[in-house]
Length: 128
Image (cartoon, rainbow, N blue to C red; front, side, top):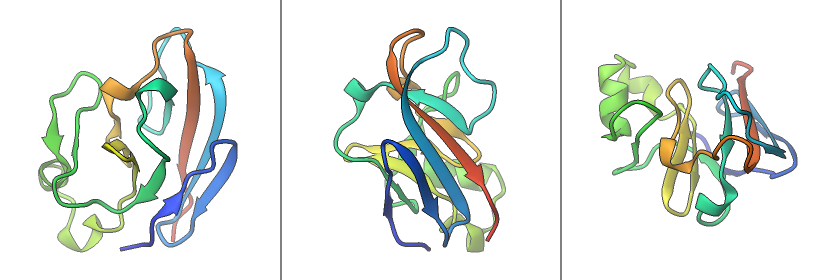
């Protein structure tokens, strides 16, 4: 696993041990949601505390848009992610739990409404 890294709300955050870079900036949410899982718009009013990039923890659960809530463990098992890699997959979380997971996408309940003020977050895998 890698050490948790606080997300900078303006600018870039490197998570070198996981091979990811996150950029974050305030921006209005677009009318059409982005098509990929690595660009998303969070509603700042639906966040609880600071955002941190961290490995999964026991009990973490996520409900991406159009999908049901499941534990991160079940998402990884069903995605056939080998056990040895599961601790290296980053989650973006606040005090209430995960808001995004690499390869899966954001938590639907935390997304900003179209046109509303939001935090635009773009996650990019650079490799380890």
